[in-house]
Image (cartoon, rainbow, N blue to C red):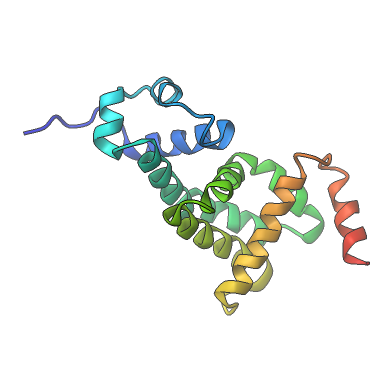
Length: 167
């Protein structure tokens, strides 16, 4: 009989998602994960098979859990407060930015990204009756606002978004 893991799987997946969101997939080494998660290397490989396996499980965990609270917060925010809300929820959204890069070469990540974008889009912009394509497009727009905030100060973002929408 194998040993029982001495760590909480959900906590490890949340922490791994935060590390990947901060360092990026390529920038996050196994050593970073071992140190940041306080889990032995062998335990990580046994539980997740590989760094990719851990990334996909962390992303699934994120899409099915923490992302739903982000979507709820966005749904409750008034339109002018969305950039502030996106900035406040940056850690949860940054994992999706990393996943967006990886989705082009990994079908499992692409599947999770589609679910994440649809969840975000339905929550704030379109409601439950939107098609999957419409919801993913709306979610992508919200995620794009988060990406833009890396380049444009958050307090200036509403002004720029308004200017673009009136052209």
